[in-house]
Length: 386
Image 1 (spheres, rainbow, N blue to C red):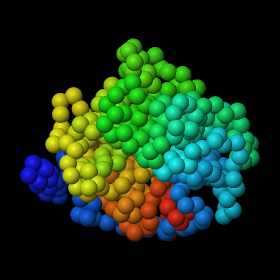
Image 2: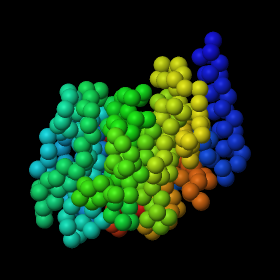
Image 3: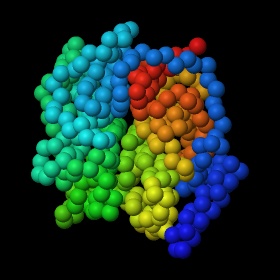
Image 4: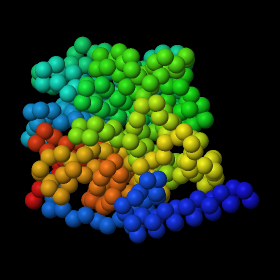
């Protein structure tokens, strides 16, 4: 009976907050967004498939010369040269544990890549104690022809390996001071990792570009805490973006059944998982009665029903005038891009774009502003203005 009351309460919360959203889009803090109610945005663009045969294109990283690097989650790093459809396998990868949601994950270029050639990668690694694997961050220099990884260096490896195949995260971003941030999901240990600062998992981390721990990280002086941790209480962050103009670190993460979150990431901040959540178990039962709690940061916005968010970016170029300055967030479950209009660190409006294009796993923006999508089971799509 108590579980039934809880589910009815959550249904009422979703109905009320969605009604508020539709009536007054100026305030979306912790409100539920029902994607079915969003308007579709029509742009004069044409999706063009430029590479096929990639089952799970976790990340796309455009290079300064127009080439693309693409991760296939099962463990292959591809090079797609400009104006070519031939995929070239890049050599020099570490041993990767292809396990469930684990594998070869995100990519990011160092901000000074043109001079130092450093490429950063996250992947699932079985190194360390215990059976299974956990998320690792490494860097390597990309050869001049972009076909080899040289001088590999592992910068961080999550401890407490697990044989569970879910929630590895992971995305990588740099801020305007060349600190590198990356995420590790809760690794399927909901009630163990996210709220425990002595354990990896359910965290976003901050490091110097060479992997050293910044002395001003929030938990450096706390006994038994992981000193690389920047924020905690996360479920599975699979999108991050650093806004250079506002110096804001954005992230989104998967809820379970409902409660996908958009967050602004701040140091020494607890994002609540699993103590607070707008979601419920996949079985339909409740695991918490709380959607907020003092000392735990509420999301900027949340999606109920879940859209299964993947990658995100802010459009900074002039190639798509209607999108400039807006945040793009991809949905895997319902195959569309959510276009977010932001003001004062809040979402003031949302639209759907390219509904039905496919299960969008990754987003990227080239040096010339061109947008790329990675579609599960399809390949890489370029958005060409007509």
